[in-house]
Length: 438
Ligand code: SF4
Ligand code: SF4
Image: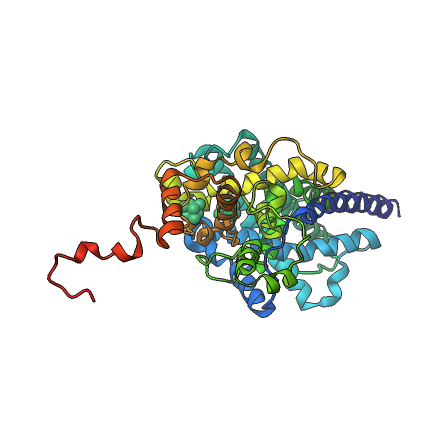
């Protein structure tokens, strides 16, 4: 009974801290702007199955992609075993899901095998991170804290897998020696126990110690994740579900600009759609609260893997732009300003902004809007949408753009085309040629 009480109290503390943190993070969504309506649920579900659960985009780098996919699938499989452990801990029983029969056997067997596969993958990841100079893991946005965070999360996952393997080994060894019924199938534990034979007493101690180590690491990990880049463990699947379904290159219209144009063309209809006393909105994105809920969701989901930056032509040609940094900056700025905005209201001003204090104009104008970053991102994050909206702020609110673009804007305004000639003069170059231009 004491064991159950200790377990229940620990579980309660875990839930309270977790939901406090999640509630705070979700609260920041109230500050964000609308994006697109979430429709086409079947199409979204299919995309989620393919990209998130099928891990299709990660296989563009087959070897390391396969190792990552193993970790993801392993987490999904091991989750079922973890749920059983929580029920066991609360009810004071052992293997509470054994009534599922063959399904329980399958859950235990796959969990046992995946624990080993995930542990091997994590060791490969750790060795790569620590001993190899992988370019993708470097960049101005990758501070020491990012590297420590990544190594800490990988170490915790490794501890989870090792404790799961030793727990199965202790359970299997104890039951086998004492002649008890073994609930489930444990191929890896069976192999390990032949390599390291244990007495019944040692098996029992290992089982008990590993059980608590495993479950407490899960509880700690769940509360560590929201403060870590590994928050993507929770966010990546829903982020893929909420992907933008339109073609990547398609620019969205700005509602407030559309309204202005309608106002010019048909004032009566436009006033009916938006009353004259409607609050004046900011054009584009200057700060975190101007970003859409999808931009913010993207930033929370980012794993900092650097796949986007590794294919960005601007970054590859030595420009300052890194699409990964854009996402990390939005997340950091919301974390910095969000609490005060929620407490003091939308008028709060700390004389800082996402634009310039985090992301410079130089970075924004370096983007070619090629969408390679969005195409490469394994969880369908869309960086260009935020970059374009930040540029829109610069142009529409500050009339700030590189000289070459200003000339283009002037030409469009004066000539109706980006060139410096009026429409009548556009074919002057062909006048002396012996061709019929009429
Ligand atoms: S869209 Fe912009 S940020 Fe993304 S890869 Fe292309 S140049 Fe880089
Ligand atoms: S935006 Fe996507 S590709 Fe880029 S670092 Fe984040 S998760 Fe990786």
